[in-house]
Image 1 (tube, rainbow over the protein chains, first blue to last red):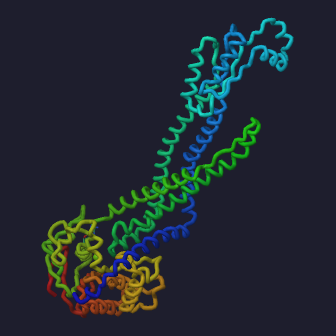
Image 2 (image 1 turned 30 degrees about the vertical axis):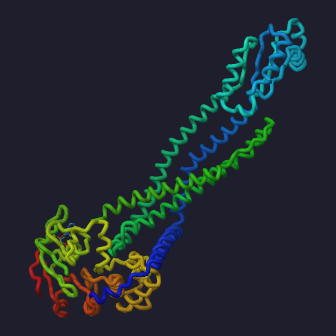
Image 3 (image 1 turned 120 degrees about the vertical axis):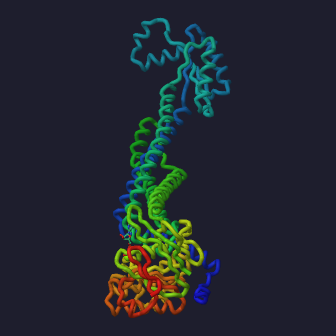
Length: 319
Length: 220
Ligand SMILES: Nc1ncnc2c1ncn2[C@@H]1O[C@H](COP(=O)(O)OP(=O)(O)O)[C@@H](O)[C@H]1O
Ligand SMILES: [Mg+2]
């Protein structure tokens, strides 16, 4: 017997390493090839994963788009400063010039009350009624455009507080209330997406687990036989982990395609709506980095889901 | 050397399949294991292949207590044993080549070496040229030969066969037994479980006889 066993030559290291890698590569793509035998089942699972993941990833794209809308509004936000009735035109002009020099202010335009009344008279259609008033009921107004750098809420709020402290000022009005609310809602929505991502991540895990479980059952004999001839746990697990990889890979890719397809479908009507408001707004597609992250996430879920099922199954078998 | 020392096996919730079994098998020896159905023949072979673990006693192989081998190392221990079954246990949706090469792929040999060894094994069992056939297209005797080729392709020092001729007619059975003799002649230890007493007597090797889990005769 010693004679026999000495015949077993150990392959050279590089050769055995190459063989090892070749086997890996072979199983990797063989697991892909196996799907071609049951394309319907494969597409079912991939579709369910894609649809499940398109929900959180689509929501995230929507939120990003809304944020970029609110960001654009931020930049051309104007503050109207209503002065006290008693303030003279000269004082108002001085104040306007003073504000113009504030480093948070890009532009301060004085709308003198006489001019404002004239304008109102012309455009409102209440011309004769206003004439009947006698006294001009309007105050001087300074229209402030904050500089573009001031795009965050805190600086804007600071500017408003400073203005309010000045003695001649009656009212500072900024149409920011709804913007605050929108941003607040978007923050909550973002948190909501995190929760939905976790929940649906579990759903994907279950989908993959279930699919792999069926695959395991249909290959029970094959597993038993490979175990009989000395297959290690990792050898048996490998093709199933690769299956999980491919489910996750294609599920993730299709999820991103679904989301971008939806963006494409909505983009056209959105930009024509925006053009009604003199804006050239276009929807953002999912950034490539995000898509890569989603596919990576999906692949991880596929591999983990598969690993859980197969390792549990093998643990039950092992003696 | 294979050595059973006071080995007992009780299946969970069942009766004792083996009771206090002791025997030795020298390296390079060939022996038969007989007994009625349910005597414990398959159980004894399963303990050697670590498909089951004994509840008492020691199963020693080359002075190693294989009942103590960790789960992690079981696959490597199994590669030193070629197993053959009555129902062949082949992969029916794979070719003859794929079936026979399985142990070599698991062991991580390179493609060239795998081809060479598979051809050699198929040559020994007389199936050369049928590499690309599917097992189902071959006869029962030929299917059993695929199983034998798979068991020896890795050149294990020991072969265990569980009722290898159970489904075959006497003539084919004798051919199969002759194959085992050939492997034994080049130094492989062979243990064959069979209840075909007349065949065993005709060939005439050492016979271990089990009866209701007890080793009643281990000389033959
Ligand atoms: N997995 C099992 N679980 C419970 N009992 C078993 C199991 N396998 C075998 N047995 C019992 O152990 C005894 C011996 O069986 P076995 O080793 O298969 O005998 P043989 O191969 O000689 O016919 C029988 O009584 C059988 O019912
Ligand atoms: Mg049996």
